[in-house]
Length: 176
Image 1 (tube, rainbow, N blue to C red):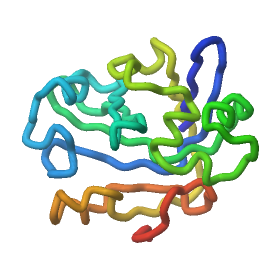
Image 2 (image 1 turned 180 degrees about the vertical axis):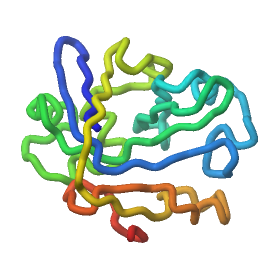
Image 3 (image 1 turned 90 degrees about the vertical axis):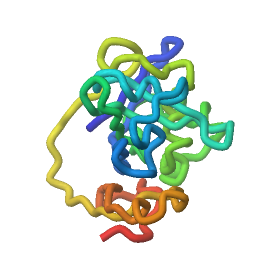
Image 4 (image 1 turned 180 degrees about the horizontal axis):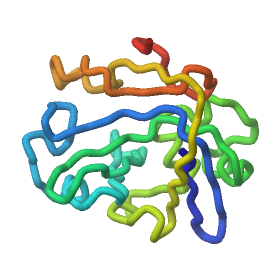
């Protein structure tokens, strides 16, 4: 799949290379047990909108809501391989050299694509972000999600998927 944004007249895009899934049925999800608070309200919308939140109060994290209305589930975009607007993506990242590591990590993805918390709730393909679904013959690897040790046994769920052949995957630990 290819994600693209057009922000301030600048179009940027990248092929998604790594994702993590979250469901209200497990403790790693912000909306665990259907916890409906202002921060999670976007997750309760119909699938196809953005759920953007800050981690550590600094980095925006881009999630795509996937469930039906009132069924809070989302996919976190962990890495992309840039396609279009690479100079703009590097500028947004404050970098001048192109390296895979600059686009592998969810905070880096949102920054490169120009996504901010103010974009939370926007609809895919109707607002500034588009998702183009394509077919890929590349193999996927899967493993546990990253950074949710607080969720106990749910942290071990194999709900992270990555392109087995990509240099743009953020962490390979636990992926098989």
